[in-house]
Image (cartoon, rainbow, N blue to C red; front, side, top):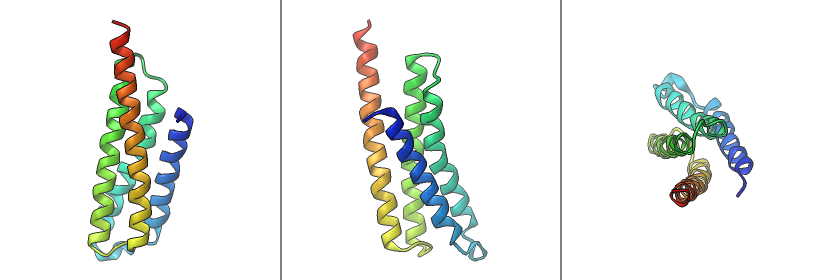
Length: 121
């Protein structure tokens, strides 16, 4: 998968999450959950975007690792929103599915980048 496709997926996920969170009643104490998931989901794409301007292969790999961690954190917040009945099961399933796709792409990209570093030694 091309990097731009990964960036587009990450951006679409963040925008989907923002859209879902726009419908959450934050008066019920859910504002912390909403703030956390918006931060982590938007950070995925931000780190992928930043990796394009990495100063080294190690910096590139590090940015993708951060994106991977943020993706994992986003999955956690989706589970918290679902568990607290803040979002419906259908929305949670769609978001978790897309997070899973992005996570697998990131893992594959990190593995490939590490192999490329090893091959240059």
